[in-house]
Structure formats: C-alpha cells, structure tokens
Image (cartoon, rainbow, N blue to C red; front, side, top):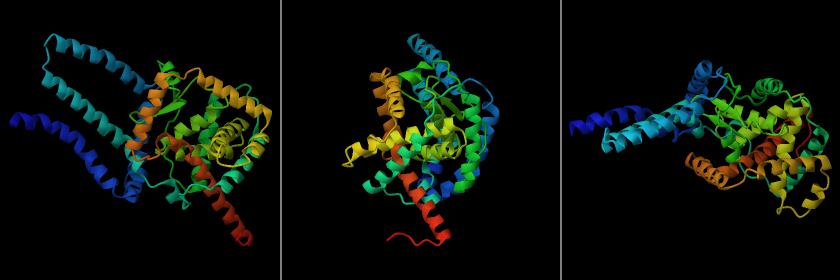
Length: 360
C-alpha cells in the first residue's frame, strides 16, 4: 500500500492543480476570463515567449522528434528486461500527466473563456439567409476592389503590419490582447504540415507560431494573423479568424486586405451555396482573377489530399469537440456570424450618433 501511495503521489501532485482549475473554470467562464485570461495568461505568455520566442526553430517539434529515439530506447530496454512492465506503465502515465498539466496551465484553460459574442455584446445566433446575402454582396465588392497581384512578397513586412494591426484591433474592440514575441518558427520536418493539409499551427507548450512555408502569398497574411491570435489566448477558431480578418482589413497594406477578403469570401460562398436561390447571381459578380486565385489555392491543397490528411482532419475535429468547441472543425467558419453581428452593431452605433432611427 505504501508503495502504491508513493507511486501515485507524484502524479496527483502534477495533475491536482489542473483538475482543480478545470473544476472551477468549467463552472464559470467569467472567473476564467478574469483570473486566467486577463490576469495569469498575459504573464505566462510573456515569460514563455521571452525565453523561447527569439529562437528561430521550433522547440516543440524538436521535443517531439527527440521522443522518437527515447521511445526506441525504452522499447529496447523492455525487450532486454532491463525495465519492468510496471515501470514502463508508470513512465507513460507520468509523461501523460506532465503533458496534460503543461497544456492546460500554459494555454488550454483559454478554451473555457467567455465567448467573444458575450465580451463584445453581440448576438451568438447564426445569421439568416438575408444577412448572408448582404454580407456576401459586401464582401464581393470589397474583394473585387482589394484584388492585387502579389509581387516582392516580404514576410517580415507582413508580420510587422499584422503586429501593428493587433494593437489597433485590441483598442477598437476593447479587448486585452497579451504582448509577446510572436515571430513564426521554422520546422525541421516541414512536410508534415503539407501531408496533414495544415496551413499553420500554434504550439501551446512553448507558445510558438508555425506557418506552412509553402502557403501561397494570398494565404499567408491571414493565416499568420490567425495563428498569432491563438498565441494571444484566443482558443476558439472562429474567434481567431474574426480577429485575423479585422487585423488584415484594418491595415493600410493591400497584401493583408486582399488575403483577408479572399479568405472570407470563400467561406461566404460555401455558406451561401445551396442555401440561397440566387447564388449564381452573386457568383457572376466576382472578378475572373479572383476565381482564378480560388482555383490556384484549391489545386495547391488537393495535391496533398490523402489518408494522412483525412486522419488529421478527424483527429483535430475530435480534439476541438473534447475542448468544448461543439462544432469541431466547422467552427472555422463561425467568423461569418461574428463579423455580421459585429458590423450590424457598429452600424447601429453610427446611426444612433447620427440620430438615425433603426429600421423597423
């Protein structure tokens, strides 16, 4: 009995704070917002990026790679009977406990935050077809006007513009967006992002932003802005897209403007397809050059489609659902509704200032 207690005690010591946090934070999103998101997390990410943000390569990936020879060595030791099965099980449980606790304490509690709709006082409901039509028409006009051909694409300049954009958006929305070093990290085995059809990934363990180096220039600004939103404590994919769109469209940089509008137009078209009768009417208004860009992006990703990508998609869907994102990967398109209701709120505010009565 004493041996069992001695064995279990370290596991309880590691996981107890997290289970206590989950117990408290899962019951009150407001407490999560005030204690973790606004008080603890800004300090956590500042410390993490101070120590690891300046390193040009991905420490998270390096750690995963180093686990492979460690696992092989462990299996070799088991085969040689140098380590008992019980010891192996304990090491496995200990490792899981560390990863589980590290994940939630470092970043994962952000999944329990107040929804952006609540923080911005906008509707959490899905927009109806009339609002989708209006949003689609506006985005077509905006994308047609924003269209550019990407030349002399400078990633450092793009990153600087996105950082500047976040300072503007934070003030505009009245949101606390933590500071930190958010430069994208290079990966050693970059092919894994292509094989899983992943545009970018944020590692919560060392607060590292990774962007697929083979992204087309049209995709890069929006994806980088999205991953930076995760580092700022935005766990919800729709909310990260919402902030990324605002950051890019508030910018004076045409590369950011078109990237965001192109991305959002694609999602609006998918939402509108099969749900509005006059879909073809809107589709015909899009510039041929933008349609050509849609084809280029689709062709770029289809060459990486396969079993690995399908498995990755399903696994991430389950991961999101396990962390209270009930829509799973469909949550990525939730920024459509966020933007519609936010724009309506802004429009209503302007009308009130101008003394214009709301439409009835």
